[in-house]
Length: 468
Image 1 (cartoon, helix red, strand yellow):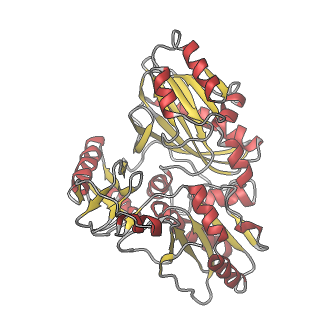
Image 2 (cartoon, rainbow, N blue to C red):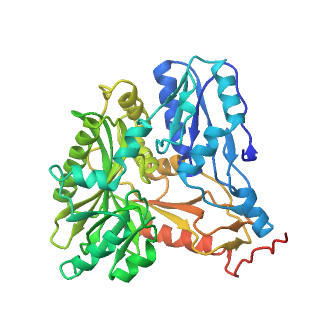
Image 3 (tube, rainbow, N blue to C red):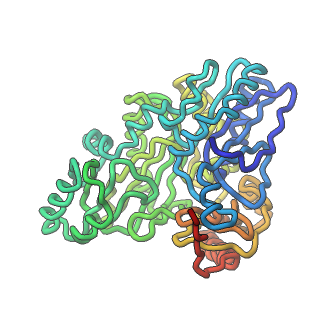
């Protein structure tokens, strides 16, 4: 059982609660869901957020912070450490924690049912086996099956323009297949483990040697596909309630570094309308397929667009994805009052299998909102010497831009704080830039990165010597 690093939640009378389990960067989604549940049930709702993010300070109510690795990292470095934990490891840790189970029992003594809300539904989450606890999202077993890249590619060829690919059972088969295909796939070969996200567990290989160095597990399944040179990596966010009821939130352009590493997105897409219309149509077909597989809820579809403006399917994210909160803020400012937002649409998709009658998709970009995000990931362990104040949240920033109270703005969110060690692979902060044109967004993202850079000491961090 991991120590609770931080807790500040207080239960209020005459209030029903749901529990969010996931990273702090998605905290804002719960506010939209809280408001939706209050409207649907005509009573007061609130939430408790269980997160793994180890920070110096927190400007968020209703938190429980648990990180199974924080103590061991602190012992290694002799200081507080912000470290990443995988979603599966975090879900397993929370599911096994007796204090979380005691909290759930306490809540169920106050209310008939308890919703669990997550960024991604994973099989490692087992708290829903407690009577009265329900996952407000896709079924974990269904999500896990559908997030397999191999399953997607082998089943979606008749629905979407899937890139030429091969499925390889084991490392030796993968390496041999790469060796055979390189004379034909001269632009490179995309190699991925069966499950991979944000560029983790995948590379673009230009030699058999590169693939051999990256992937060492002998018995895993691998997906390899022809790499297509391109300039655009659009992503579509959507909700599926059934095969005839698909909601498209919008199209954004992903920022992909080093071929596979996702670092953020920008909206609106710079692609022409005929291309974004086709992307929306393909995402709708993906939603129909997901619904036919038993999936209900928010999902994302990633594509590439080559120099001939041809679209190629890359993957479905059978979960919420990095643009979800930003699209919630965009839709709130762009749609008429009373229209359901994404968490409410997901609620109806999961509980009713249908979207509400007052559902409305966004036409164009009526408030001329432009935004971009950047996830500042640390690739070598560093030390922070200063902090960035935690101020206005995203939702308020979007409203200020939409109301034209400001021409442009940028926020630095979830900065770990000062006098912290940021372990390799962790995020030090997240940037959101807004404006009424792409140049303002680009400017804000650059300025945000420079501001974060000033908090980092690049001197190599040494581990403490451990004595037996």
